[in-house]
Structure formats: C-alpha cells, structure tokens
Length: 144
Image (cartoon, rainbow, N blue to C red; front, side, top):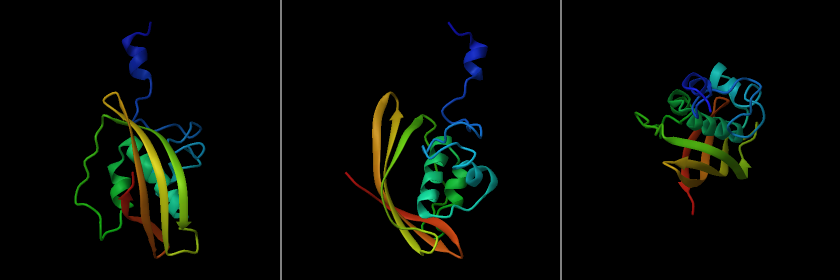
C-alpha cells in the first residue's frame, strides 16, 4: 500500500515529462520530440510536428502553446481545457503537404482520451498554414 506522500510524488496526467521520458504524442522522448517546442519555443519544421506538439499541449493543459500555435484568423479569444480529460494516445493517419517547403498542410489523426472513466476518441483532419516560416493551426474537420 502506498502512503499519501508517495502518491503525491507520482506524476499526474498533466505534469511535464522529463527529457528522457516518453513524449505524450508517442514520437520519442519528450526532450527530443515536443519538449523543445513547448519548453523552449522551438518552431516545428513540419505541420505534423506542430500537430504533435498541440496534442502534447492538450495532454499537459498548456493553453499558452495552443493559443500561440493557432492562426490569428481563427484563434479563439480564450481557451477552456477540461483538467479531467486524460489524453492517452495519438495515431497519425495521414499527412498531405505540410513539409519544410510547403505553405499548407493537412494532418489526419485520432486522439484517444479518457474522461470521467469513459473512453473517447477524437478523429480530425486539421489544416495548417505556414507564414514567414512558421507553422500554425488553421482549423479542423471532425470526422466519424
């Protein structure tokens, strides 16, 4: 049996991983995957990398990164996140464009989550644009 001090020392679902721990997006270690973007402001080189960093930001409840990476023409004034949502897995299904030489990109993905003990899944085709070398999330179409 674990005591309260030991339980409170365990990372919660929204705690940032250490650099050598798995990245929430599943793309490798946090320190070489989404960590540089979320913690150091490094610009993702592709639309998929930005989408992965946004998934990780949802998993970590990082509103700042989500708003900064949203295109100004579609960015909401405020963003409410449900601290009770635990993002469990990201599966990238398809990418169209979105490379280092592209101006636009589309990334289709499924994001698995748990909320209130119930499993859920978000299936979306997200559109991204690159202005002045910087990728941003434009909008998304929910599928299924």
